[in-house]
Image (cartoon, rainbow, N blue to C red; front, side, top):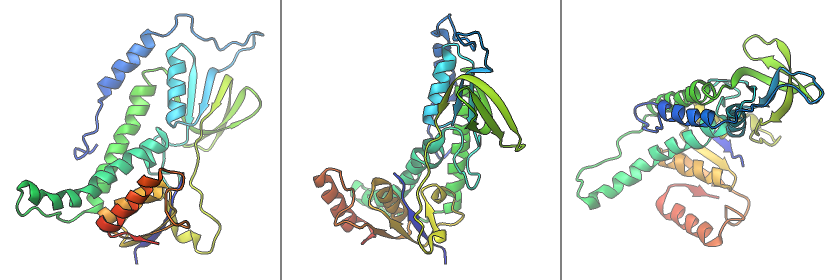
Length: 291
């Protein structure tokens, strides 16, 4: 019946979110030109040589920046990321990490879409007669969202990292001693061993789903970006900011939303005035059922 329970965790032409590839390229050139002439060497002080100066495991925000800056200063860098294209179940995320693939970027696009009915409702006061919200098309939105995330995947791989001189390897990695990494190649399944003077682990985290009856019917803030159909109803379990974000997003898009949290007021630890104001706004200006 197209219902979902979501647990929280702590371009298309329609989405005009630029900078362009040229902007990134100019930035990369500045980094490269300012790099020290005395580049890092893949040779240890004892004369032992390594395949790389630095191997970075994980291509999220931290891994991308660390590898890019190190390469800009002359280091020989390899970055391991299991997926270079987003949306592959059960991973969903890819190069660029949570923010690009299953976090900030697609969430903001959903926020923009969800605000439209409320903004249209205010237009009569500005002289726009007969303006109506229309009908939201989940498939159209998802196709546009996916195109934009694919564009960003390509910017990270083919502009930001490529022009910095980082070698990108589609693989996961596991440590094999203080200076060795076993690379598990995504495409072939084979394992290759490389050595590095330094190894950086930047693999990020994963949403937690408690071991309770029925948990197999729940989704997290990863899967919500790839649902084939818009849920007619949804229960959001949690009172953190991600829970509130998705509750208000899905309400704005027309889903029947219940928000459940165990305390007397959500956003524990945040400013009390803000918490109370948000509850008042959600009560008066949304259809969310707060429980």
